[in-house]
Amino acid sequence: EAGVAQSPRYKIIEKRQSVAFWCNPISGHATLYWYQQILGQGPKLLIQFQNNGVVDDSQLPKDRFSAERLKGVDSTLKIQPAKLEDSAVYLCASSLGGGRAQYFGPGTRLTVL
Amino acid sequence: LAKTTQPISMDSYEGQEVNITCSHNNIATNDYITWYQQFPSQGPRFIIQGYKTKVTNEVASLFIPADRKSSTLSLPRVSLSDTAVYYCLVGDGGFKTIFGAGTRLFVKA
Image (cartoon, rainbow over the protein chains, first blue to last red):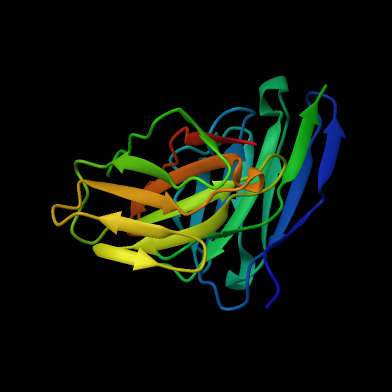
């Protein structure tokens, strides 16, 4: 069974530029998560989708971050404009929902200069 | 929302059994307890999940007492490749999934 796919794996941009990340979850997984992980810290949930509806986006900086999950499958996370403090690894995970195990992709390492 | 508390770090030697305990005093009735392992430059990897009593798979065991206010991840006979960060996560998949800082396990030869 294919795992969670993410692209790109690495991205370097300058501050105030825009960037987008893509995630393809495991087939059949209704729940999709985006996390931000800063070096030395645990993953921080940015947004959680159940199918194509938002369950939790309370920690998403909505003035600059946006995410969508069209048709309840793939998802994109966008940052516009980027700040230096957005440098982190952005992780996508999916699960069957209901508290069951999350399966993570390899992440996208973003560096903002 | 169940907050979790784990030791920040642990050291062990190859071949030993390692037990990492997680406290979650306000766990809710519907919450599962899930443990993840993370290596540098990789996403967290699911290890084991349980609701009560004991769960065992090919990688680890999870012990959950009757009151469910804590859980213990047991790794039998660790090797150098088990050096990683281990996260305990408690929830029902609903609002606010929160990872703590995790436990950094360092296995020495």
